[in-house]
Image (cartoon, rainbow, N blue to C red; front, top):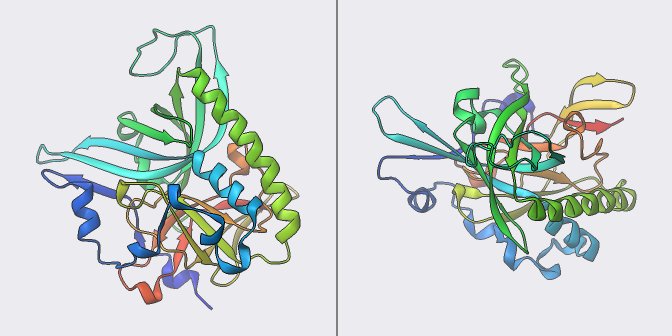
Length: 302
């Protein structure tokens, strides 16, 4: 059985470039040698799901989750004066509309009075500090549309070095209301479908699905299984367990923050940052045959 102690010091998996580097060059020089096991989201079909899970409702759920998964980019200046660009992944956990005050979007500078706040779950090492996050964007690509939202503030973090929880919730802002309303529908459909899948597969909790942006390039999906039992970090309220998981679904730099969907998992709920599901946090360094990855802290129902 895999050990949390053996992997908690694995490598964080944000991708970054400086100087003349490109994200394509990072892809080409990746030492994991596992890229052929990813499935581009546009190529995903029922036949490409794992053999024992070729379920049309599961496929629909994965596509919904993919529409709510975006690429985070944080631009900063390093000591030698070169720009450092970090890319990772985030998931739209909650959406709310704001009005009667100027939009906080750094691009429009208060021009719009109606705007949307999108709460994104990801991991700390992607967004960094408050000052770093102020230079962030998130690309949202769905089956119908593509648009960019802008970093507003960090609202919640778990930065416990001893437990390596490595999770955060951040707010991005958009004034493209019609596009955001489409995402609201997607999020509601996701909640309903997750509940149905839980009831169907709650006695078969092992399939793991990760949707993200390996190497900060295209959105891809990988499949795997859990590696051992979850680790319960603490119990909160009467019905919640803060926990994390190990799994062998493949990941690369750029996968940090990707939503980790575990079929049959008793997810506490979407739509609230305090009931968040898990995000990918760390991976084994290079050896594909021994790749065991670890999630951030997340919340399960007891």
